Length: 244
Length: 314
Image (cartoon, rainbow over all chains, first blue to last red; front, side, top):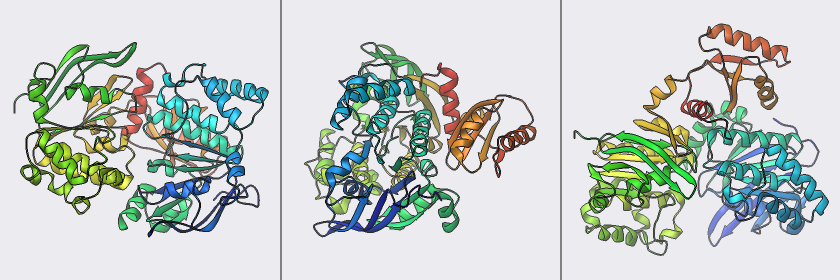
């Protein structure tokens, strides 16, 4: 298991609950994510993952319980949290009718980066990704996803949330994307990621599996496979999610 | 049943300057599950739209159940079930209203089609008063499949039916397709998930508008051209970078908890290669690493097909 680089966890969740009417979408979940850790947040459709993530990024108020991200309270410090986190999903990434550089400038501006810093980081980003400046709409999906990830890291957030970042991309690009994740984590960024690809779950330092609003198991892939006596996380996922 | 259910010959289609499909040819036999496996943007949807008469190819011909997809479009439409990506349902109609609507469009009734759809529809029937918009992803998928089947077609075209659906629901969906095939239906299905390829009788690997390979999944993986090893060890990311620099590294990719290392020496002795690899890793300072020879999977084959056919596009 990865040791947190600092004493304070990057994400600290305690008894977090969210109800909609009489439906409990997130039911009393508790877990910590260490700084620089790659944490896989797994669950079937409708298990409550999206509701939990919305609370962690300050878009939805908890019904009860607490969560801290980068040391900030998600219930009361939503503005500060947004400046300290990055977010990327398959559905929301970049503006298609803007160029690569325009997108970077836009996000840099939103996060209050100086023009000089934006110019510096733009050229580094294009070089690292091997991209030329062009309309984002013209890029293949895999490139868009890699660019969106880099843009989400532009303001050097403490924690990045990735919601199914690799859906639909080819197997090579999917793996290149994971190398970007490893790189970010090696630099100390905490990565919180959801995926439907169970082989990707094995790439995480630790994973949790959510069923009907609860976290039913949590640990490193190796620990969990030993504990549940299965060969793959896929096998474990099917067993736990189907048992509900 | 002499002619194949689907015959595609040299189909090409451009959108402006973009070549969506380039010279596609394949056959699908009656009662077969044929999979088109490839990432987003590979051309799968364009091909489905051509085969379901919704788009005309620039060049080439295609027949479905012996009917030409351009000339005989009305005859094709009545015999084909089509489930487009994103499940085209009417969100503000209920489950039952959606089904009734699709039945009436094809001049039939839900009762007449009930027997065929029953194994799938029964799972969502308790929610038949619910608006389609309010269904979960897995339930929408079941309703969309029921709607595509309600007029009892002879062939089903399913465009990415499992995209965005969790691993458990994906398995259940493929079990359903197996049952439909047993009832005599031909199924053409596309997916970006490589692991679903093994559920097909034959698959076509598609990327960039071109078919890279068509065969039974077992034959595709058997044709993997080079020795492949599964490498395990701690500190996988550093191990990955180190393995890429190994003298005979052809490719190195993470696969679940392992790394897959392909050696560039085609006919070498496998035991010798794996011993050599272990020695190399030890020399690089990695303790507790192992390398053993494994057969390729579909994803290994797909990666190899992409890299060997295209000049490293990605």
